[in-house]
Amino acid sequence: MDAPRSTPRTVNCPRCSTAVAWVADNHFKPFCSERCKMVDLGAWANEEYRVAAVEQEDEVEDSREPGES
Image (cartoon, rainbow, N blue to C red; front, side, top):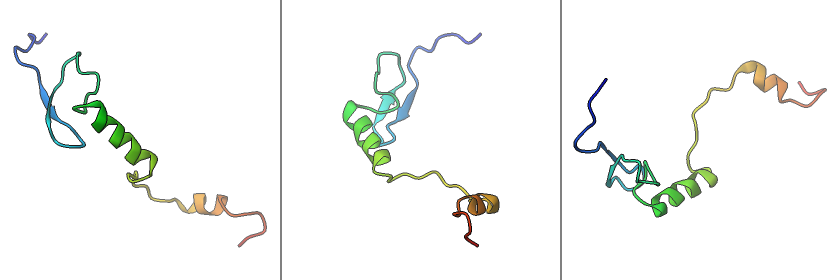
């Protein structure tokens, strides 16, 4: 088993790139603050981020109304 680290691991805040210590006391991880966390949540809510997907042919057919070609 690994020995505990003497210095905590750091990551960059996904919103502002500030270095953030990855410790249990940080309630906003991976963000540096509540502000960055809420700004990121707002971006998701406004659909500024999208998960890439390829639409399958059978999904296109299933989404049509009955009687459409």
